[in-house]
Image (cartoon, rainbow, N blue to C red; front, side, top):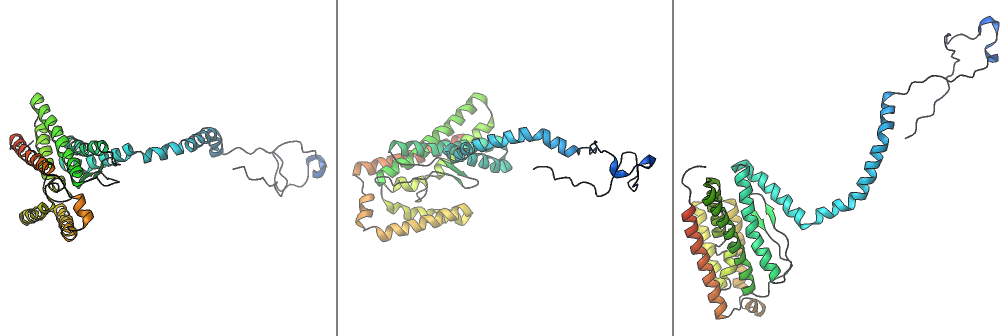
Amino acid sequence: MGEPERTPPSSPFLLGGDASSTEEPHGAPFESVERDYAPIHPEPGWKSLARKLWAPIAALGVLGWKLKFLVLALFKLKIFATSATMVASVGAYTLIWGWAFALGFVLLMFVHELGHVLEARRQGLDVSAPMFIPFLGALIMLREQPQSVWHEARLAAAGPIVGSLGALAAWGVYAATGRDLFLALAFTGFFLNLFNLAPIWQLDGGRIVSAIHPGFWIPGVLLLGAFMYFYPSPILIVILVLGVLQAWRWWRQRRDPEVRRYYAATPRQRVAAAVIYAALVGLLGLAMNATFLERDL
């Protein structure tokens, strides 16, 4: 902004004289004196500082304007969204377990979800990057449906398989270092993957057993309801409600030709799904028993 226009003083002012004087010394009239001087008005300090800072501020503004589109593009990148939600989850879990365990816990979830992403891309499906929700877990979003229940079962099994490898890696680090932190992480990783094998629709186990027969969802919700009677949890309530709704929806639409086509599987595929499910449950149960840590960290 420019400086405001200075208004000339309404009364004459002579350097060294009195503002109320109207006569020049020696009797010379005031109007006859030739005024060839300039009034002295010291510049305020803030204006001097603003003038010095103006150039770098303007340069930063231009640079920021040019980088605006780059910043917006970074926010749209999948890796940015994944990293931001991972950091938020680590911060949330740090409040409970400390940063070291929280970081390992989130990384184990990331490895699990990475298994889903890799299998989805192998099947040619449009899939989102993993997203993390503090205290609820992690998820991926499929923008298109798998071709059949067998494809969906393979997609679901990829999470616990790759996730178990992540927990196994933590167990290996414990064997090499002897640090109980990594044994606790291994146990937690095995538990997370085993929990996801519960035969409830929105969990990995529910999608695997649906390749055997969707009717397995019904005993799954009954077992979860019995478990919640002894160990109530808000998260389990959400899982149970969604599981009941999906089981009821399938039961009502089970004779629909399109539903029957989607859930159709060959005998070999049903046997393969059963073997994969049983093997994962058995191996993860044994791994949990082997990594159980009785003493405190």
